[in-house]
Structures are given as C-alpha cells and as structure tokens.
Length: 335
Image (tube, rainbow, N blue to C red; front, side):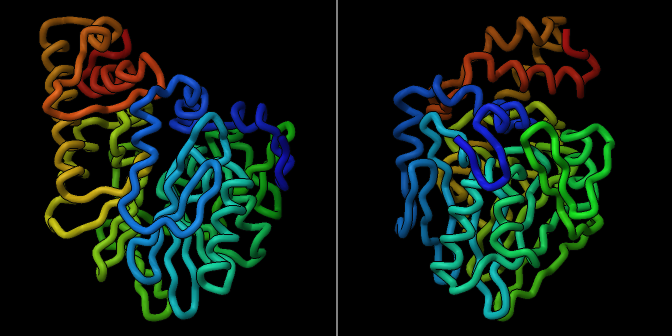
C-alpha cells in the first residue's frame, strides 16, 4: 500500500514515533470492548472512512475520530475548525492517506483546503501525515512549539536538519516538519481565523511539550494525548505527576467538550473517570516504589478496579510504560 509521500505500510510502522508505534503494532490485539469503544458517537457523523469518522460538535467545528481496525492510516484523533478567513486542522494523522481524508473533508465542509495544521505533540501518529496537508495546500502553515519541532526532528533523524523544502527523507518515508513555530509560554497563542479565535495553550505531561487547541465559545478542547478516553494511556515519554496536574486543570470549566487524542469525544464526567484512573495508577506505582518492588514486577500485579469502568489495552504489557515512567520520576529507574 502506497500514498503520495512514497510511504508503504511497512515504512509507516518502521517510521512511527512514540505512541504511534505503540498503537499501530498492537491494533490486531484489540478486543470486543475496543470495537464498542470506537463505535461510540457523541455528535452527528457527517462523513466516514474505514479508519475514521467525522463528528459535528457545533456549527463550524468537527472532531475526526480515528477508528483503527487493523489499518494504519489514522490511529489518533484530529479536528477541523472553520473561520471566515482560514481553516485549521488539529494534528496530522499517521499517514498521508489519513491527512488527505481530513484535508478533503475540510474542503468539502468549508470550501477550502486547510490553511493551518497544529500539532499537539511530536509523536508520529499525530505528525507523520503532515506531508499530505502540504500536498493539499503548498502554503499551509504547519504549526507547533519550537520544542515539539526539535523533538520531532530528533525522533526522525537524530539531529539531521531537514532539506530546504522542509522535508526529511529516510528510506522511502518522507517526513515533513512544521514550518511555523512558537515559543511555549504561560500565555496562550491566539490564531484569528476570521470570526473564530483559536487558542494554543502550552502544556506538559504526556511529552515535554504538549499543546491543547481550545475554543472559548463554544467551549471545546482538543487535548492531544494528554487525555485518552476508554483506552489506557501511553506513558512512554510522560512525566506522570505533571500529566495528572495538567489534566486536572481542564476541569475548571464543567461545560467543556473534550476531544481526546484517542477514543471518543467526552465531557467532564468522562474526564473525571480518566483523572481517577491516573490517580489510581500513580498510587499503585508510588506504593510499589515505597515497598521496593521493581516496576518490571509491579505492573504485572496491577489491576484497574471495576468502579473506574473498562479501559481497553492496545497491548498486554501497556501498564509497564506507566510503572516505568513513575519509577523514572521517583528515582527508581527502569529495573
């Protein structure tokens, strides 16, 4: 299978970064709950593909929910925001095919190709498809924090700079990196799309540089992988205590619609369950650390209480990443 970036399925899996490879290599292991989870709809579905569906959240705002069933085109969520003068897409899917679907959908819904694509973080399942958006509109602004761009470059080619056209070619996989960066800081960066102001809020927790994409009215937050819904979160690059603190800060406004990085759209009730899960994992990891139980053993003993509901696993050892991340933070390494 090939796309316009010259990327085969094997290349896409080889080139996946962070939670992208974690998700992709485990799609075949998903059980019945996973199928039910991805079938959950909150808004009106107005378009779909085998790997994603597009839900209308409000007039001019859509969530693109990945529905992976063994494919790789899209394994993380995205979004489309329409303004009078521009169209912004949140995240870039895992492949050119995934981003082409989003770009074509944006054009069908708004009359124009995306003018902006904002990365919530550097992991490949959110960034590999930038090339598809660049193909749809050569003038598109590919936006991230400066640190996210650096992390993406480092993950792809360990410090090798991109070519003059902003691309990196590795084997048959062509990677495009952001062409517009901003410095992370305490104040949001605002993008005026014409009648719609999008706030880019710098965060940390899932990675050293995360961004939430927020709309004030109606209240919508694209959370990136700071939030998972119904799927156990990936902790590979996480700072667990910061992750929990960041997610807790989202609950200041109970009327928000949250678009997680993976799983269906949710609300404050769903986010509270997720926060309870993070707290439960953290308590178990800290208890194991205090008792001298290595993370390699502690994760095998861990179970999620029924009161927190079902949390699907992309792979049998997914808890391992959480306990290793807590061990790193607590000073215990990855024994």
